[in-house]
Every structure is written in C-alpha cells, then in structure tokens.
Image 1 (cartoon, rainbow, N blue to C red):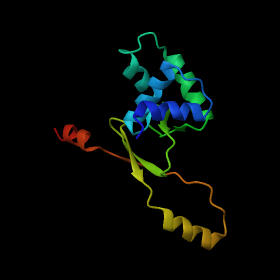
Image 2: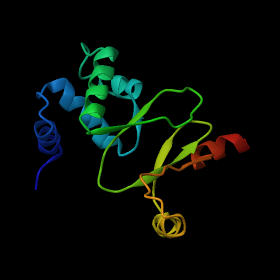
Image 3: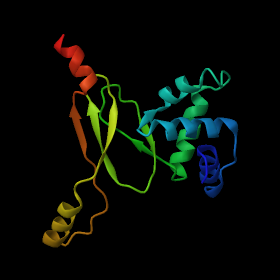
Image 4: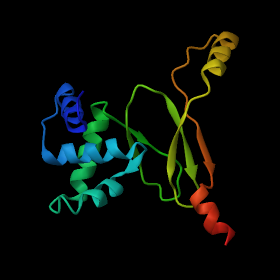
Length: 146
C-alpha cells in the first residue's frame, strides 16, 4: 500500500508535473486537510517547515494544479471571497459552510435520484450540479450562546 507521499508523487507524475519539494508539500497540506482550503491556509501551514516559500508560489502552483485537473477551485460565497481548493477525488460531494468561522465540511451528495427524475421529466443532459448549505457549526454555536 502506498503512503501519502508516494500517492502525491504519483499524482504529479501522472499529470506530467515536475516534482519539487514545494509542490509535494502544498499537495500534502491539501491531502491532509480532507476539506477545501485556501492558499493562505496552505502558506501558513508550510511557513515553519518551508520558510522560503512565498504566497505567490502557492497561488501559482494551485492554479497549475487546477489546470491539470488535480484540484478543483471553489467559490463558496464566504464573505472573505477567498478561493478554496480541494483535491478532485472520485466521489461527488457538496459543502456545508459555517457563516461565523467559514469552516467548510464536505457532504455526500444525496441528489442522484433527483437528477434521474429531472433527466426523465425534461430530456436534458445534465452536466453538473453544486449545492452550498450555510449554517453555524457546533463550535461557533457554543460561543454564540455565551
């Protein structure tokens, strides 16, 4: 079984992207997060271990990864308007977003049957769908009650 580093290296090789320590580190942060993250989050996470890394380098690599189909860029409608990025994985999902702390939680997609019904009723060829649900996470609920 491959470890995380080997999987990341394989992803980069398969997309014909030159392996660098910075690219591997960026993808490792995203891989570990298991949820959409911002370039700023990645940059902050890597500052201790990669002090020479620049935020512009993170952005440049994120856009390279999006263009190569490794990452998906998300506009989640969070008030800071910062883009979020996530690994493109096999499973389709949606996002639950806290309106206080902007945390993002992936949700399994429950719309498969609904999509089939829409196709049958309209004869459309459906391409994609996206759902964003906004709420207040349990952590923020504790502090908003105080």
